[in-house]
Image 1 (cartoon, rainbow, N blue to C red):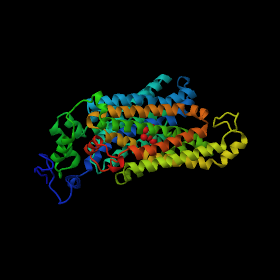
Image 2: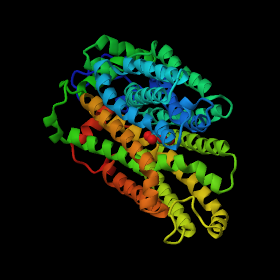
Image 3: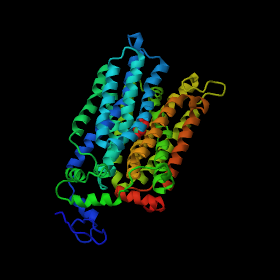
Image 4: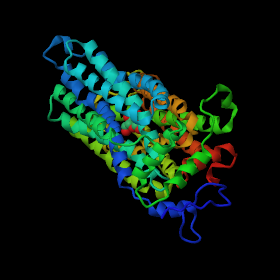
Length: 497
Ligand code: BGC
């Protein structure tokens, strides 16, 4: 039963009646019904499903377009690499756009509007008469992916409560990797135009279902729409809890100030989470994940796995399985421990990968390109190929357990409400721009630093990830977004939180 009493400790705010000794939050959470929260999360994660599909789309499509019967659509190697990577540039721009619209028109509407560039992008690809139309379609798909990758984590963290926020937030990455896998699997049977038709389906469902879901209570309160915020909480938490209490808890901790001023970057509550968010995104990408995924087919081919589409499906499946494991455990283990374990697994596997390349490296004077090996070295390489396959599998597993899902989750948790749009925009921009640089420059790095040097560099950055996690990233498990905001005002050590 909702209680209208005020607590001396909470001033005039409402406190839910309940079990003696339990905190008001525990009492509240024990009565929450999650069914509609799960439904709202499901509607939102159709966005990451769509952007996973966009990321996976190039893998079966590039080989098909390279052999296209229509010369106007036939891609050479350079055009194929642009077809793959131009999405990341569109997504980086989507980060800037997303940071603006998420605060202007709200979380729900921003997400619904994303359907447009997804569907228009795929339609242009389907109707393509020349390569430029393919690029434009991919840029639009990328733009939608960038906005989605910003808005969905924010939407979920703002509608969720602290008990399940980690699990629901991790579903973002889970749906990304399911989308990637879906494109790989569907690509084994569907022609590239039909694949684009299929890619348009999830965003349409997202539009349809999101129309019936509420805006987030935090955004509504910021807009001074209190009764709508209460209605949203009634939908999201079920009828058994004191919605007034959660509403006043959010209000009490929400800064009255509406706009973020540049001078505020001197304030630790702004600059600390800002630096943490950007650095996490930077580290996620310089771990080399996209380069390694991109390169996985070649690695398996060298290991004598002839069916390269089966290989990409295997890589996608490892990601899905271990991302699901992370989602199940994250609210029990916390974010920091998973990040540390993930970083260590990635550092070790990238180092082993480097050792593999060092053993099979061509002698000085030969080209250092991975594919130009002498027959003796090719024999050696063949014997050791299991090492490459093992390290690749371990690396992907490590990423899925922590550095895949958690940066997106933490991004949605650490910024104060008024800085959330702009700061998340900067994070998304950093992430996708770095993804572009790493995938585009990967082969040049392999030549400049040698293959083993490149992988040892990835290994070293993964170790830095671990150090950075231990020293700088606070544990946000079980905390409300408002408690996290208060933490950054103080100067406690990350582990003490
Ligand atoms: C990363 C992407 C990556 C994807 C694959 C995401 O978290 O941001 O760059 O391609 O995971 O698993």
